[in-house]
Each structure stands twice: as C-alpha cells, then as structure tokens.
Image 1 (cartoon, rainbow, N blue to C red):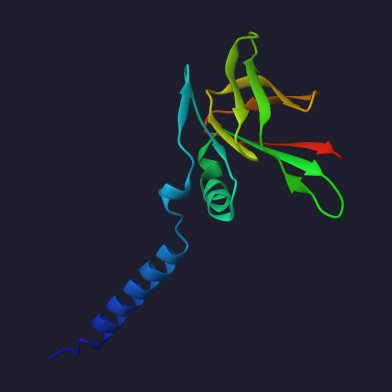
Image 2 (image 1 turned 90 degrees about the vertical axis):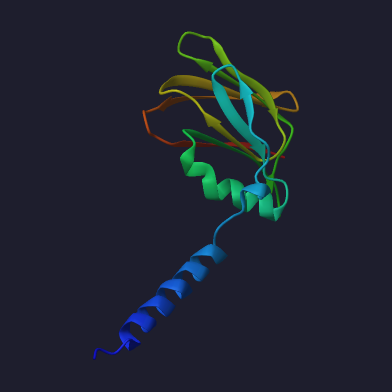
Length: 144
C-alpha cells in the first residue's frame, strides 16, 4: 500500500501557494470606473493608495499609460485635473477628457498619436507610437 503523505503534502503546498498569491491580488473594486469615448475605453484616477496600487497593477494590460507629476521640493507630487487630448495621425481627436487622478489608462488601436496634457495653462505635447499588443508609458512632468 502506497503512502498518501506525498499527495497530502503536495495538496497543502498548492493551497498555501494559492493563498499567498491571492494576498497580492488587487480587487477590481479598487479601480476607478471605465469610460468610453468613441472607440477608446479608458479609466482615470489613482487618488489614494489602494486605487493607485490597483491602477499600477493593471496598467500593462492597456496600450497607453499616462502619469502626471509635479516636480516639487522636497519631493515630487502626483497631479489630478490635467486636461488630456489624444489625436491620431490623421488629426482626429480620439480622446478628450480631464484626468481625475495622476493616472490615465487607455485602450487605443495600434498607431501614431499626439498626446497633449494641459495643467494651469501649460501644455505639454508628446508623440507616441503604439504597436499591436504593445504598451507605452508616458510621464508628464511639470515643475513648481
């Protein structure tokens, strides 16, 4: 008769691993709501640690990740209420919104885009190319 000890030990190890992995899972309830504008789905937020962590956790699943930062002393600060406009290569506005937190994640089709971010009258422009199944992260920085 074979011992069941190795099978029991394997079952305990597997359940322990599953429990430890779940401890690192970020609940979807911590994410801000998804919005849609034309063919673009996006979410914006990141105010508070749980929402910020949740957004960072799912960011790579979005073709475009934007972050808004104020370079200040003694340390940098996240920004909210940044006006964002994304235009495609044909100058068509794909997304026009105000970021409600320091992060904006967008599902855009592959292509070339010009992103404009405006804060307190200062506009910054960045051109990006998003590849099929790719991910681009852009950090917009302002100084105080």
